Structure formats: C-alpha cells, structure tokens
Image (cartoon, rainbow, N blue to C red):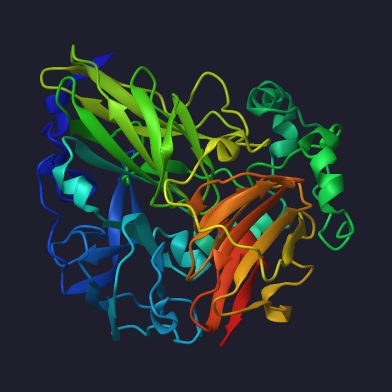
Length: 506
C-alpha cells in the first residue's frame, strides 16, 4: 500500500511541530525566544487523543535552536497546574541554574517564572523535567546549539526526538513496574536468543536480584576476564514496561513525519533519546550513514547502517541520500522487541509506503559487549593527565522488590562521590545487575577511557551506557564547587533510588 507524499501537505515544515524538528538546509537558527513555557498539549496518537506536557518557545513550537555562540538567555514560565523544574541536559550552566530539585533551587511553582542566562555548549542536546513522572509525560524538548560549520555545511538538518508513551497516568505505570506485573522479559527469552547473539552474547536464566553490595568485591581484573561471557546461564532484563506507543517527533510510524529532502542531498540527523525507559536502535536502511557525534561531542566518523542510543544520549548521523530520489524510512527500533517508530525522508514526487509499527523480528539487545562504545574516538579528547582520584561507583538493584541503588544506597540515604575542583577524576561505573544503566553526570562532560579495564581514548560524553556485568571508566576534570546530580537515566530506576550526587569541594 502506498500514498502520495503530499498526504499531510508533504513538506515537514508546513506544520508547527515539523518546523521545530526539521530545519531547511540554508536556514539560520531561530532567535532565542524570550520565554519558554512548561505547558500542556494534546497529541493525536493513532487516532486517540493523548494529553501530555511540553516545553514551548515563543514561536509556539517545542524546544530551542540557538546560533553559534548565542547565550542561553530566557525566562522559564510554569503554565502547568503542578510544580516542575527543567534540566538543560548537555549544558554546563552555573550550578544554581542546572535544574535539579533543591540542588540548590526549589521547584518552580505553578504560574511562577525563573530567569536563566549562561554560555552554551554547542551540539545536539535537550531539556527535560527533573521530576521523573513529568518526563514520562513528555515534558522535554530539543535544545540544539549549532556550530559555525553547521551554518556553512551543504546539508539539511533533521531532528529525531524519541519518546515512549502510555495513556495511563505515570504514577500507575510506576506502580505497575514496581509490582512486577508488566515485566515480561522472561517470556521473551526465546525471541531474544537470536537478537542477543547478534549483539554479542546469548543470555538465559535470571539474575535480576544481584545487587552492587552483594558483589562489590569483584575487581577490575576479574571483570576484564568475566565481562559478558561470564553471564552464561543468566537472563538480561531489557524492558520494564510495554508502552502504548513509541514516538518520533510526537508521532507513530502509522502516521509518520515526512521530511522533504533533495535527491542526492546530505542530511545531518540529530537523534535525541528522550524516552523514559526505552533503548533504541537507529536504522538508516538503504541510506549510507556515518556517526559523527555523540552527546553533542564530535567523534571520528564511524560508518554503519545501525547505531544504538540509550536514554539521555544523542547521536549525530550524516546521511548521503541516493541520487535517484525516492522515500527512505529512518527507523527507531525498540531494543529487544518488535515495536518500531521512525520518520520518512522523501524527495519530490516520491511515493511513501505505509509501514507497520511492528517489525518481523525483535531488535537485538544494545551494546552488551560495548562494541559500539569501544569503536568511538573523540575528535577533541581531554589532555592526558594522571588521575588524582578514582572513585568506584557500584550500580546495584533488583526487580523484586523493585529497588535500584548506587553504592548500595538509594538517593535519600546517599553518600556523595567526592572530588575537589580542578582534580582529574577517573570514575568507574561497575554494573552488577542484569539491566543496563545509562549514567548521566550533571555539570560536566567526560571522556570514556576504559571498558572492563582495557584503556582506550574514547568519546566525550555526558551520558554513558553501562550494560549488565560491565565496567566503564570515564575521565573528567571536576568543575564548579557544588553538588551535582549523578544518576541513571532510566526514569523508573532513578525514581526507585538509582541516583546520588557528585560533590565538588573548593
């Protein structure tokens, strides 16, 4: 079945939503709106109305796109009926403007506004509520800061903003997850055998109950030999909850955004995983692709048809479109499952096939052997320097009861990770659970420098994915003396305890 691509006006820029996500090739970034509003909005989810939140700029569209060197200067207004606070993910503002509840600023009350003014970090970033249930209600949006080369490059920019969505209240979703009623990975084990092997390793059995405290004595040398191969007979837990829809730019694959592109053109695809609890694979299909940045930080180009992105992470992917023209689906595949979403790049006159939101086979687990992470190389790495401190951050947890920890503690009982400003810190995340954890540090960019004890000059990031039974070491220079959030970006994990702080002293 096909339909002519003018089915929704054809041009992605013809609607307010599309204008926010697809920028014309020669455009100049919009001037920063003087206000940004946290507001409610209604989406059409396959013919059913879904009431969600959003971050709306002065032009009435989601998010912000800033010019090179443009400051982040605006007033945030809370038009919601409940308190909120917004974190500028990937930016390094003064700690008071970072957007973590009571660290140090309180929640923004309904009707209240708050001013922000700080120098921006370039790249593909995003902004979201730091109240977990509000992020599950889509209170998030892109935050793009262009580089000078973005304005001069002969390429079109397209943003893919990924979300998972439930018609149920987020409190009900969390209750369901915590009760174990929706946890169905054990039933999917057979389907994942092929997918898991494709990603690097087979997993079977259940080890969801191991905590960091139980196995904290496992050292670097043991992990290097053990890695994922030592998990034979164990089952990896991938998805806590089956959401009602998986969205790209607020739309499902049943009614995707169609982006007008030129035959033989080049596209910079800015991919942002804003999902609460879903890892995606980005599949470019027949279109030649190369990964050129992660978390807004340039990497040496890495070619390939498929790249994974965990919650909180971003990918910049350059696409070279065929000269003959046509329609090219760019798909977001749910890890360990058959659900998928995406958008369509289409040249003038092309016909666009209607695609199912379910693939024929489940997508594999993401980066269980960290092969993708190990292949990345920073264009601008940190200067070589010996570490002053090297904290170990143990990631623990279990499915029943549903409790996730850092160093065997939940947030309310936390012991901060500490350093002094200016110190070189090598922080090792040691995951002793059978779920992966995308670990995000506020106020800093870091470099991945070791996987399971093996050193290499990896990518600069702010969010690193740590798969089950793995160790990832990151290096950073401690910044402003303050208490910075450090947490898993899987929202149910964070809401159930997996967060602490990185306390930097003067």
